Image 1: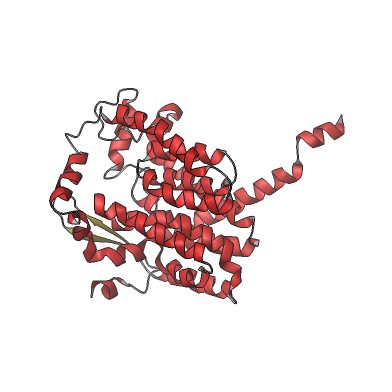
Image 2 (image 1 turned 180 degrees about the vertical axis):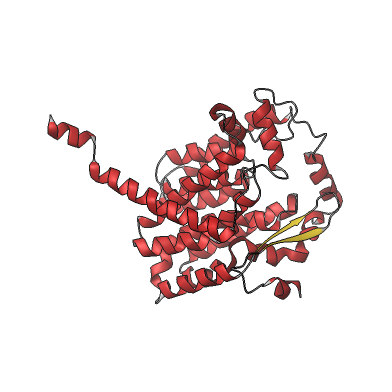
Amino acid sequence: MVAQIKKTFNYRDISDTVYKLTISLVIFGFGLFINRGVSLSPTSLGVYFDELARSLPDISSSPFPHRILLPFISYITRLDVQIINIILLYLFVYNLFSYLLNSKGVKTAILICLIFSTTMVFQFHIIYGGYPDILSLLLYLLCLTNIKNNSFFIYFFLSLLVREAALIVAPILFLIRQYENKHDKTFIKMSFVILIYLPIYFLLQKEANFSNSNGWEFYIMPLLNDPLFWFKKSVGYYWLGFFTSMKFAFLLLPLILKSKRDYSLVFISFICVNIQFIVSGGDNTRYWLIFFIPFIYILKNNLVKFKNYKIVLLLILTLNIITPKHYVFTDANKGNMYVTPYGSKLHIFDYYSFFDN
C-alpha cells in the first residue's frame, strides 16, 4: 500500500516543480523591478479585449471577435483580462525556465531568463494592458516544449484562436518540428488544423464591429496601389524596432548560428516578421517579438558551443539593465512614427540617438 502511494505521488517530481516555480517567481519579480511597475488595467487596443470579455457571449460590439481565446478565459474565470495576462506572464517565465533547464545548467537557464525579463518579450505585457500577445507567446513556447508530441497541434490551434497572426508564425513552427520529427506528416497535420480554424475565424469575424476600429479593408486596399504602402510607413524606425524587442540579446545571434538549418530558420523567420510590416505596418517592436521563438530554439541548442558564454550572458544582462526600454509604433490613421521611452533610474545609457541618426 505504501509503495503504491509513493508510486502515485512522486515526491521528487513535486519538489522539482516547487523549485522551478520558486526560481521562476524570483525571475518574474526581477522583471517587474527592472520594468519599475506594472499596468493592472487595459490600454489602447487592450481595451477592446477587455470589453469583449465583459460582453460575452454577445460578440457583436467587438472589432476582434475572432481573437476570442483571451476574452473567453477572462469570461469563464471572472478575472480581468490584464490580471490573466500577468498570470500568463508568470507561466511563460516558468515554462521558459523549464524548457532551458532540460538542456542547460541551472545558472545558464536563470541567466537567459533574466536577460529576456529585461526586454519587451517580458515588459510589453506589463506596460500595455489587455493585449493577447503573452498568451500567443506562451502557446508558441508550449509548441516548442512539445515539439515531438501531438499536443503540439493543440497548442498551435489554440494560438490561432488568440490571434490570426499565428498563421504567420506557422512556417517557423513547421520548420522547427520538421527538424525534430523528420518523418512526421507535419505539413498535412498543420494544414488540417488551419482548415478547422478558418471556418471558425470567418464565422466570428463576420460579427466584427469596426465602428471604433479599422477593418481589414483599411489595411488591404492601399496595398492594391502600392504593395509596400505600410512597410514604407514603418521603415524609418525599422531597425530600432528590431533592437527594442530584445535589445542586446541579439548579440548572441552570430555566436549561436552553427548550421545551414539554423540559417534557414532565421531566414524564414525574417520573412515571416516582415510579412506583418507589409500587410499592416505599425507596431515595429511588437512585430519582432515572434522572432523570440526561433531565437530561443537555436539558443537552447547551440549556446554551449562557444567559449566563455556565461561571461557573454552576464555582459548582455548588464547592458540590457542599464539601457532604457523603447517601444516603436505607427499611428495607422495618421501614418506618424512614434518612439515611446520608458526609462528609470537604472538606465544610464540610451541607444535611441544612435538609431535616430
